[in-house]
Image 1: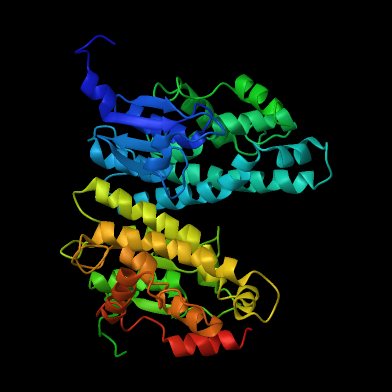
Image 2: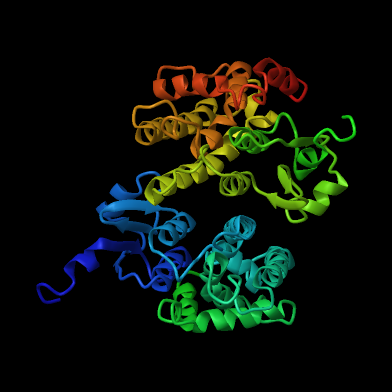
Length: 236
Length: 236
């Protein structure tokens, strides 16, 4: 970067993260929706930078948003912060509709609770069960996720009101909360040979997933499924 | 109630809950802060009413707020809804200060994560360990909570800015999130003979706890510690 070329903008908003983390992706998509420039500082897996330890001393986890040096942690807290700091027209939580906002927050929390199931699938034990390479109840592991996705299919119908996204005509809070996991969900489908979004059980969600992944605010930060599969293969 | 005596107000806002639940208490304190009249519909422990099952089909848990018949679930989601629907002057999340709001939400989430530790203390196994009546690491069980309270002591200093509450001069989101657990924290101290708030480790938090419990929006809905101790005695 040449001296004088937007140095303030680059330093103003920084994200401590990693390309493979769905939680970091939430933050990047929110910033992109708002048209905010940011700098992604990649954390190395298995190490924690001094900046991360200083910025999130409680959890020591990514993502952290540094806005003018002030740290904010927890992905959905950051998404709400981004929504409140940077003005419309791009609105993430439904505006002037507290009930719709509450429904989005409810399902956002549900996704985070259920995500412990989905995200833990990244890790060897669960994937080995799903692949059938170690003993364990494959159906149970798969059913938990299917149940969650069936609930989210219903939530999509309720929130989107027949439009494109959970956020109606545009990407909103719940699109970001769930959409950030799509790369991993698809990777798990491929690795474990299970149908999650791919089956016929959640047709609205499956069509939404394709739209979400192709959205201009998403396409450049959605990790490639092939690379996630390769990344995971090293672990299992 | 005589016919014609505020029937609309009573029916407009209903809370499905229980007197002993800290999560239900959050909702009641938020409504009281806003001066909103509500009707508490007590759920019976071990049973779930048809209204609860219909209102929160996903989790089937209290609290549920019914506002003009529309259900909202998850205690901190409800608190934010109440804050957005009923206008200031009573403000729960810091207004016009997204950073302060993010800090409140961060710690609110921390409390909910840590609450699984505190709230599970209600239940026999953990309390038996703390009382030393069954084998288990008493120090470890106690240390987890002490660590959490030490973090929250720091958070109090940061958020209150030398004033009375996490919410500065008035009760806010984080006061509600943590304060609703005070009855149970004190009951556990007494039952298990451990010092949590009672010790000298968290002096600011201990003083805040007394203020919170005496606040007009809290005093009538904070469960009596003696009754909680008696209630728990039946279980252990």
